Image: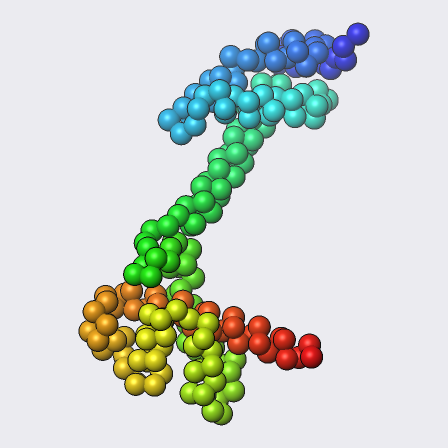
Length: 203
């Protein structure tokens, strides 16, 4: 025999009901809750979320607390939908961060996440990591981790003393792209330096 639970249908009416009976009783109510989101998600997809909310409501419902079941159900289901919406937004955000928004002159993909993380000042970071003594020589060694265009940009900046505007004119590339190349190159150099340092310390 299916398990039943006392369900308060109205302020005056309560009766023992199975989960299946409760689902049939409130199915239309679930559809009404889901309809508010029809412009955002597929109705059937979100109805499954609402159905899970109903199951959670049934399992946790306690008639002794005085709540009418439908009132409690509405709160739980709305919370489930909001949680689902947050998860979807986070997923879509993470996915879009890896969307390729540009392909550079060397065929390298540039994603949105790279552009945002490039706000970090890797120039200061790498100079802080590398001993200041004999800096140019160490930078030359780290240049091996870069492609030709990246080497050109870093050489212009460190060894020829050019600023981003001057490098842009010299190489015929936009200044914003030069900035991204510099940040990406310095990030590569930093990683290369730390790998070499880690390897030496393990010897």
